Each structure stands twice: as structure tokens, then as C-alpha cells.
Amino acid sequence: MQNNLLETARAQAEKAEPAVRAAALLRIARAQSTSDSSSARKTLLEALDAVRNIAPPAQQYLLE
Image (cartoon, rainbow, N blue to C red):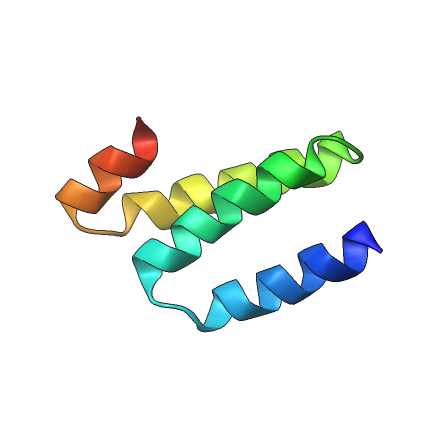
């Protein structure tokens, strides 16, 4: 069930604007960390790449 929800969330995040996508990926990584640390790490690295590609005010907020 959780994997289905996370897959749906990831699909929606892919369609979102960059700042929303980055925030969503961070939350998805956090949720994945409870059951699949390997996937969580991959998602976290993807989220950090997404954060690097957004404007500084939003970027700083997400990195805090």
C-alpha cells in the first residue's frame, strides 16, 4: 500500500514545478526511509539535485 502511494506521489511530483518537485521528493525520501533505506537514499540524492536547480530563496528554505 505504502509503495503505491509513494509511486503516485512521485508521478505527481514529476509533473510539478521545480520547487514543488524538490519538496515532494524530500518528503518521499523521508517516507521511504522507514521501509527501504536504499530507495530513500536514491530519492534524497535526486531531491538534492532538484533543490540545486531552483531559485535561491526557495533553495535555502528547502536546504534548512
